[in-house]
Image 1 (cartoon, rainbow, N blue to C red):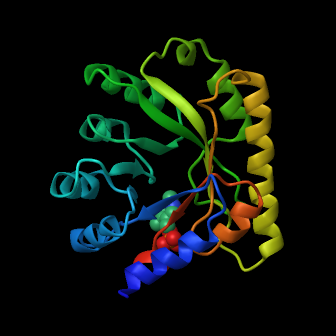
Image 2 (tube, rainbow, N blue to C red; image 1 turned 30 degrees about the vertical axis):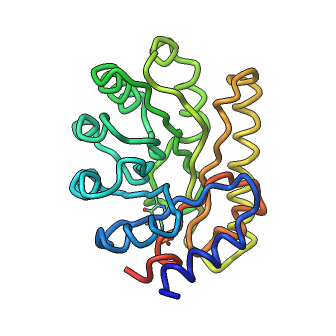
Image 3 (cartoon, rainbow, N blue to C red; image 1 turned 180 degrees about the horizontal axis):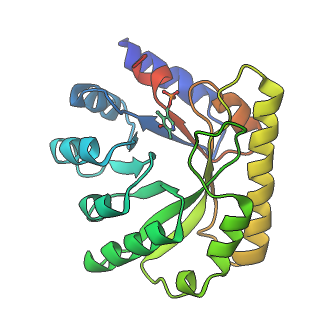
Length: 221
Ligand SMILES: *Cc1c(COP(=O)(O)O)cnc(C)c1O
C-alpha cells in the first residue's frame, strides 16, 4: 500500500459516523490529490485561492473543493464558480461579497462562519459577539445566495489537551446556541468544522462533523 492509501485507510477507521474528512492538500502536488481521489476521497481543502484555482481545472470535476484559509474579498470571484464550501467567513463584508459573486454565477454558496476559540492572538475569526451581530443584521437577512451551514474553529496549537478539549467544547456549545436561536428549523445548519492532524481525535470527541487533515494524510509540509 502507498502511504497515502494507508494513511487514508487508518483515518477512515478512526472516523466516527457522520464526520466528513476534508483532505487538506495545500502545497501538495496534483499527483497526490489524484492518488487520494483514486482511493475514494472526494473532499479536498486548500487555503490559498491561487493554488486552488491552479489545481481545480487539472482534477476531476466531482471533487468538492473547500476553501479553509483566510479569504480576501477581492479574491472571492475566482472561486465562486466552483467552490463547495467556504470554511473561513469572518466578516459580514466577506459574506456579502460571496453572496454577490454566487448570484453572478447563478448559484448558492455554502459557508461556515469562523469563530475565534483559541487563546492565541494570531488566528482569524469572529468573536461570539460579532457572530451574533452578523446573524442578527438586516444585511445578512437579505442575502439570498449564501447558506450558512455551520461554524468553524481552530484550537490553540498546544500540548495541553485539556485546553484543546475546552476550546472545542466552547465551539460546540456556541453551535448549539446559534442553532436554537437562528436556525431551529433549518436542517442545513449542521456542520462544526473542527480538528486538524494534531487534534482531530479530540475534536471528534467534542462533536466535530468535519475534520480538516493535511499532514497526517499527505505527509509533513
Ligand atoms: C493547513 C490547515 C489544516 C490542516 O493542517 P494539518 O495540521 O496539516 O492537518 C487545517 N485547517 C486549516 C485552516 C489549515 O490552514
